[in-house]
Structures are given as structure tokens and as C-alpha cells.
Image 1 (cartoon, helix red, strand yellow):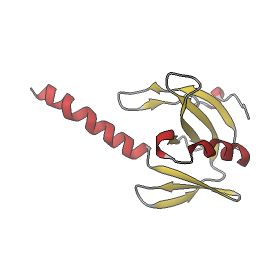
Image 2: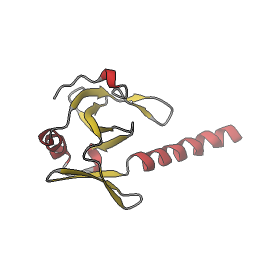
Image 3: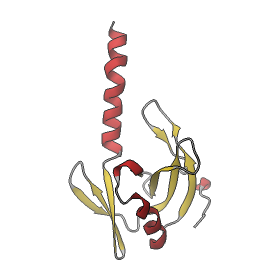
Image 4: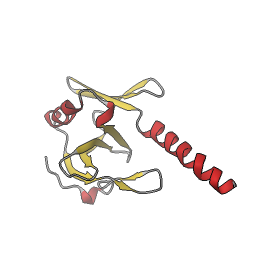
Length: 130
């Protein structure tokens, strides 16, 4: 009984916590700076010199990009999923115009039960497809 309750409530609770902690960001590209907006804590942070690059992530169909992932120098990732932005189609051209390195495309892969894996965590995996 306890195992069923854990499965019934534990996994959705873990998924909600994971989504809240990872999908809380937005970005603003203004003139010569990129600002990260944290909607959970209502803070803004300038990340202009702290970006390694970005990639496009897809699930299933290679041509159906679902998410743009920004890789930061400190090892963190900023996920910008398509369903959260009205101007999603403008994000990648703005990043490219700003001069950020496009690392490549990556499929959605699960790392843990509720977390995703990232293909370009290791700097040796970067393809430099700018």
C-alpha cells in the first residue's frame, strides 16, 4: 500500500519540483548584453560573458525542435522550451546574431527518472557549428 502511494504521489511531486527549478528562466537580449530572468525569485542576472554556447533539442522528430538549451561556463543549463515562449522562433536567430556558438542538435535523453541528460556537458563534445 505504501509503495503504491509513493508511486502515485512521489513521482508527480518530484516532477513538479524538477520542472519548477529548471524551467523558471527567461532571457532578454538587449544591445550588447544577455540578461537571465529568474521568474521564481524575481531576479535578473547579466550572463553576457558566461555562456559556452547553445544547442537545439528535439524529441522524436529531428526537425521538430522543442527546446533551446543554453550552456553556461559554470556547468549549468538554461532550458527554453517552445511551449513557454510566444516569440520562441525569434530566440535562436537572436542568439546566432549575438555571436554565440551553436553546439549542435541533441535528442531529449533521460538521465535520471525526472531529469534530462545533456549532450554537450563535456567540452570535448562541442562541434563548433557556428
